[in-house]
Image 1: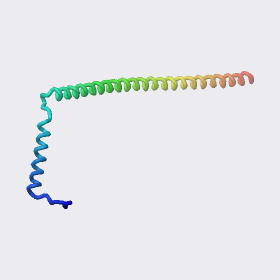
Image 2: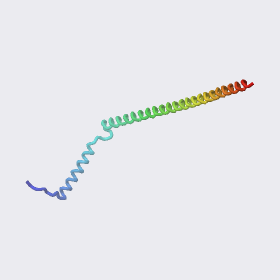
Image 3: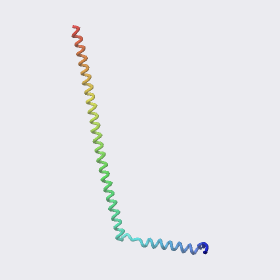
Image 4: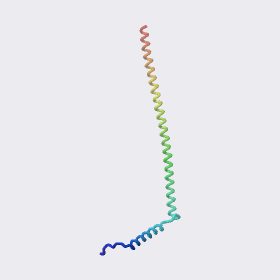
Length: 115
């Protein structure tokens, strides 16, 4: 069995030349831009991009609609809270007026009792 042989300059030069040839052959073997397979792939990518753009637009529309619904719900909730606050204030005022009327009636009864 022979040992390892150190590659010389000419061997390295030939290996580099072979690598360049292989790379050039690989590049030349690829289909050109006018090839039907390349055109079909390009059309497929464009269709996919159009579908993605359409889906994105639909998501944006849905997001805007959801935001509008959330804002409407917030307005309705604020109106409900304001209405409840007004009702509570009205009840409190009514209760105070009722208490005052009862107090005034007791006071008048006491005054009438003394006369």
